[in-house]
Amino acid sequence: MLRFRYLDFDGQTKSEAEINSPVDGEKAILDLLDDTKMKLPYGCRSGGCGVCRVKVIEGAEKLLERGFVEEDTWARCHDTNDVRLACQAKVLPGSTGLIVMCPAEEIK
Ligand code: FES
Image 1 (cartoon, rainbow, N blue to C red):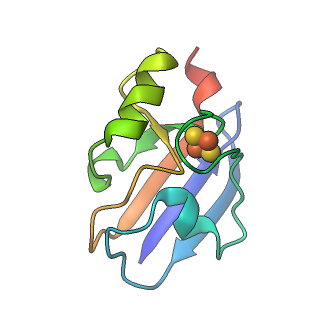
Image 2: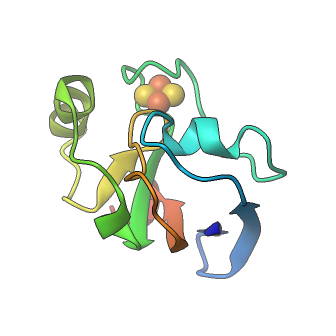
């Protein structure tokens, strides 16, 4: 089981979700959360707008490295290394455990 926790700006848990089906490495965080009650902010869902930027507080090792599109937006936003695009960051196949995120604006 893979669990997600999303914190508010004050560090309190805003929402939590569980993914019970095996993760196959094809779906980004935002896609995985589509079938859950956890709703993250998003815009384009294609990596360009940066609205879905999240700071990954715990579980970053469960994510595949940035692809070209995510790398470009990350650089344009001048983000720190722990900021990922929820619409582009894919979870490593077979991952279990907990991924904790908060809004990327928290770090600025
Ligand atoms: S929703 Fe636009 S970059 Fe993720």
